[in-house]
Structure formats: structure tokens, C-alpha cells
Image (cartoon, rainbow, N blue to C red; front, side, top):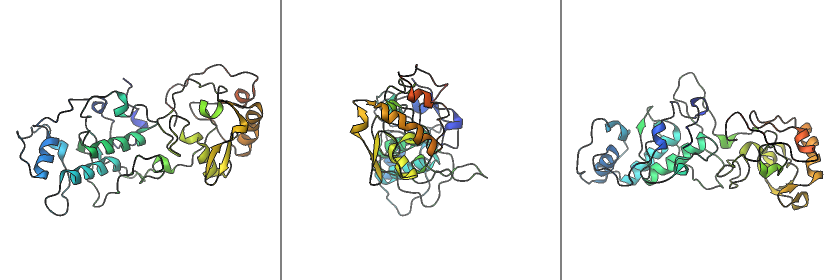
Length: 290
């Protein structure tokens, strides 16, 4: 089981709760606060009253109107999770680490996944850690075409809002096998489920995304071509999964022209790219890419 990310890397305004990395029975316990809250709000009487220990799990600000259905309440909980004012609870069913987002690039992706799980009823809503704002932004879809997300509002005072990762323009020297073939020393780096910039599955990371290079710099990296506002693979510069020698050589100009800096963990040098053979494997001190 992969350990939760360090608190310093988390978008949550509180320590990441390790309990969300475990699963419980897929059947809702009749005495759980979640089941009780949904039953009460849906007009059904629960079998047992909730225990005081779990009462905080279903805390929710008052909704306008009366008789709000379970779907409305779950959507409200999901919005609160996405806004960072609610800490999600445990996953309500069987599953491996994927249901807890351990293979996603960062906590922003995990937070969106958890919010969708809360909305569809597969994860308990957890508890509030901050009073929600009167109007919360709608939950973005998980579809790859969705590139922008509402800004994360920190619960800590004297701290400005932090933009979501999808709005970032940060770029680094490419470092994944999807971008460099075998001429990256990080060939064993596991790709993300999807790029947070373009949505490409099991490929590159957002900070090296060809489409982000096009969006930010107006130029695609070697091995890629500008296609409107995005980038597409240039087959003339690839030999199956390997960049041609000419494309690798062009990285010197590309990196120098745009003054690209290496990733803080996955540092690829010009010598790595221009060598006659793939560089030796290197292991980063930690992290998964981004």
C-alpha cells in the first residue's frame, strides 16, 4: 500500500487522513452517520440512530428549500470536498489502491476523484474542516476534455488562493519515456492515469505535456507538431517508441531557446539526450512526477 503524500505536498488545509487509504464493507451500516443523514434527508427512517462518534461525519450547512433528496445532498458534499472544506471519508466497497487515487499524479487529482466518489455514493463524505461558502463551484467532470478547475480556497488565514494544477503554466525539461523514449534515465517511472493538461492516458506528465508547451510557448517539443491549440505526435521523428537521433539533437536548441529547467526530482541533462546510447537508470529521491 502506497503511503499518503507528505502534508507539505497536499492541497488540503489539514493533515491527510490515512483512513481514506482503507476500504470498508460495501454495505452501508444502518447506524452510520452517512446512512442516517441520507435516510433522513430522503424521507426514510434509519434502522438505528447514529452514534455520537460519527455524528460529525454528516455535518452539512443548511440547504435552501425543504425536502432535498439524497442526490442533492451528495452533490453538496462532493462540492465541499472539491473546494477543500470537507475531508473525505472511507471508500465504501472493495478495491485496491486505485480507488484511493494512489496512481494519480497529485492530491488535486485525488481530491477530484474523491469528490466524484462522494457524489456517486461510493465514499463517505467525512467531516467539515471549514465553514463552506454560500455558493460552491460545481464539480468538474472527470472527462479528459475538462482542462480547467475552480481555484482551491485555503482554510488557513493570511494565505492567498492556490490555483488548481490544470491552470498551471509550469514547464520543465521532459523526463518521461513517453517524451524521450529510452533516452531518459527514469525509464521505470510509472506514468500517471491521465495527463492533467491534455488528458492523454498513461503517457506523459502535465509539466512536460506537448500541448502545454504549445499553449504556453507556442511551439511543440521535438517529436511533436503544433495542431491548432494542441500538439500531435510527429511520426517522422519517431522510430516506434524511440525519438530519432535528429529529434534528440534538436532538444538542445529547444531547451536552450526556452530556458527550460530540469524537474526538481527527475533531472534530465542534454548529455542524457545526445549520448550514443541510453543513459544509465537513475532513481529520484522521491515523488511520482507531475
